[in-house]
Length: 121
Image (cartoon, rainbow, N blue to C red; front, side, top):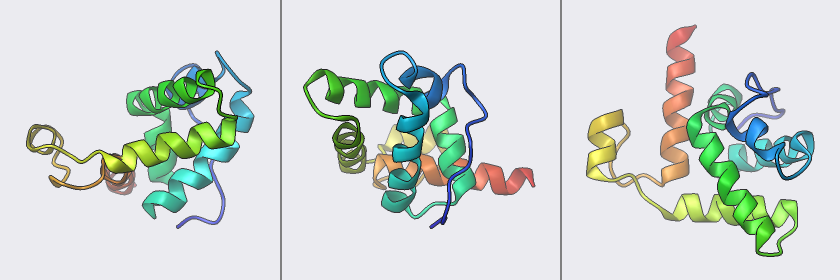
């Protein structure tokens, strides 16, 4: 698990860009990054690349839904993490991505991006 977080590489889109539309994106990033890292045990690069991806944008949408339902930012992020950890990778998603079937959705996608980052080095 990383001890610190990395800055976004995608200020216009992904989690950061999407949260800028409804809350302080820097605050959201500083809460979400370590929370996702703790929940998944992934590398900082994997967490950053997940949050910067289209999946990160969908994760931000889930956070936004929590805020709209009356949760504060930290609680909305925690609820989104719990929801994404409750879903599992389906057989179709496993075939399309190579992520192991049955893994928690958040863990699977963050690990997927961590592997891609490692292979890019």
